[in-house]
Length: 85
Image (cartoon, rainbow, N blue to C red; front, side):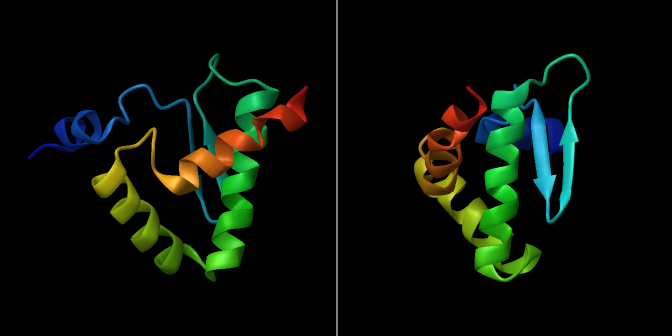
C-alpha cells in the first residue's frame, strides 16, 4: 500500500502538523497558535512515554483501534488547544 493510501485510511490526509520527538513540522500557510499548542502537547506526550519508540507504538495502535480523531492521545492534544486563546 502506498504511503498516501495509508495516510488516507488512517485519517491523516488533512494533517497540518506533525511532531516527531522535539521536532514539530507545520504545513506552510495552515498553522496557527491553536495547532502549535496541539503539537506542543504531543512533545509533552513523547516525554511522558519515554521517547519516540514508546510514543509512536502507542499512538499508532490508538489510531488503528479508535481512528485518528478518537485516539486518546489526539483527544488529549485537542484538549490543550484552548491554551492558544
